[in-house]
Length: 339
Image 1: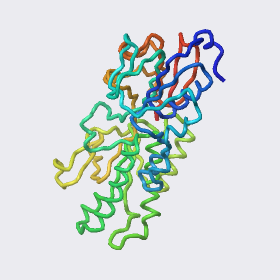
Image 2: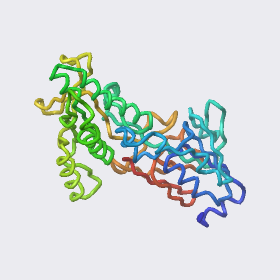
Image 3: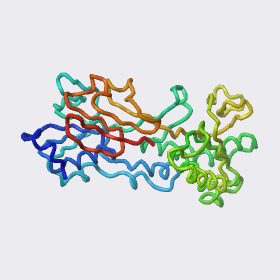
Image 4: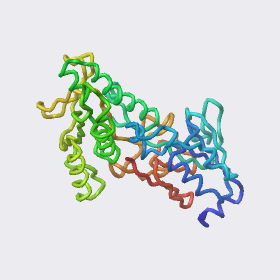
């Protein structure tokens, strides 16, 4: 039910623009279903991606269609919501418009629910070596890389090169990193175990690297220990307190492959597939180069005052993925979790 505090302020239909059709954007739109507002939801895609299952697409357990639903279908019964597939290129707080290549959208209240981008820990050059896992395109790219590595290993006769091809490295200790490591282990130890003649997929090495002291820091120590023990039992090499210092591309690696190094000089991993499983807030257009204030490394509490002026209409809100919590417009805030 829409909160009563809004009613005196919304006697006439107010224009609400929501950027992003992720969990936060859709929840915001649904929360306003019975409110006297006109909702415009803008997303660069016309589908909602169920991100928690991206790792299963990346490991060929699911197809992309299994985790994508048309946004128009989701909101088709909500008469006060209109969906547009467009990319936001700017936000003018003075004119109160959202800019897209298709034109401008007037806005009274703005909800920014653009999710997260990959975090390379300040080393953007790593992007050429390590794909992240935030979108379906990322998942299909990683899936292609993983399956191709096994196929190439079947053709290679050199043992060192074969070992490199069958080494997979994941950076990040959150749910995505843990799930990804476990899923790759299942693919190697079970799914593909009997499918090759010249290689044994079960000999593949899966390495999960984390700079912190334990996995899943947002969970209890009991859950962290359980996750580590389970991954270890599956044959995953879990390395905590091991910050990555540098990845090496194929062009500079003497063995013709790729490598990553941790701060311990003895820890160097020659590998074929490398994925980043960490994220940071994402903000469209002229907000993109400025980070929202984070209350913790994993979550954000964003209010109107924490946004750059160019992103903030006179009464705005920002949501960074996760759950939309409505409150009076004068202090409208959104809480999110970044995973």
